[in-house]
Image 1 (tube, one colour):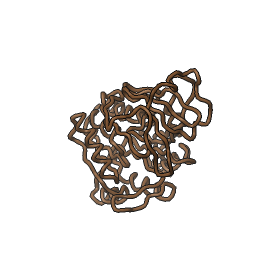
Image 2 (cartoon, rainbow, N blue to C red):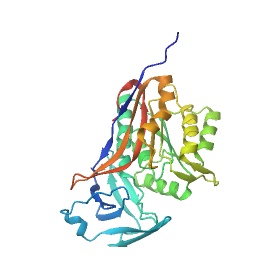
Image 3 (cartoon, one colour):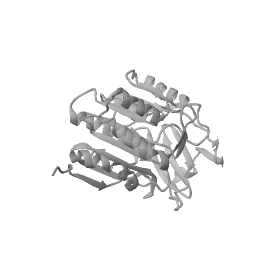
Image 4 (cartoon, rainbow, N blue to C red):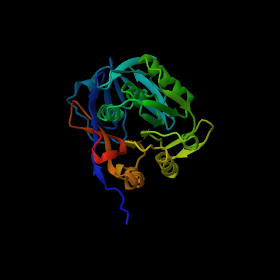
Length: 304
């Protein structure tokens, strides 16, 4: 009787506090306080229902803050942010262009920084260049750029043309010209890649709770993510070493995401790691949950 390779599941959280020009200062009373370069920023955080650190003087300092006006967005008030500005992040000396958006984002999810460090670690551990990585729902490109800097051959996809353009601007800031840029619906693109017999050593995705493809296709995470993951597994090469999924969708836990990766682990062995993405405050003991993750790594060694 043929036995399947052994695999393990490990539950652990990914925590970030600060990174070069970024610092997570405190959270509480439905707000989060952060430093982006020279700018102090307060934004809504509905999950932060506990008390803030009232001894933290920065809550009372002049700052930019975002006020939500309806379910579709809001406006920036207070000490004004410029139209755009640049910060440095990560352990790979990466520069990012940030811009205040109408939905309260700046173009950078700090909770994803550990993922970029993992891509660097894998590139070093494998001691070889030109491994292929597919980044779906790649947003403004932080993970794509960090991976390209460390030697990965990156395909970056997002359904929004303006977001892909923003990612290209970040690439120009870092003098990176090697990334393959795609504006398309994720599943349609993945199925084309399967037909082309394209293979990747790593697949990373950060799907939204709800989204629309480049031609108006509707994506609903609970309905469409299982099929997308299944198709992406078909893209993995024989030397594949990483498959990672993150989510900010309420109720979708790391354990739930890990279940999507079990068929991959049953076939290839290895390790599934899963847990929360957390931001730990520098001026209190408060910790802000920022979604969940699950990732499969080959060989059974933790990626982090």
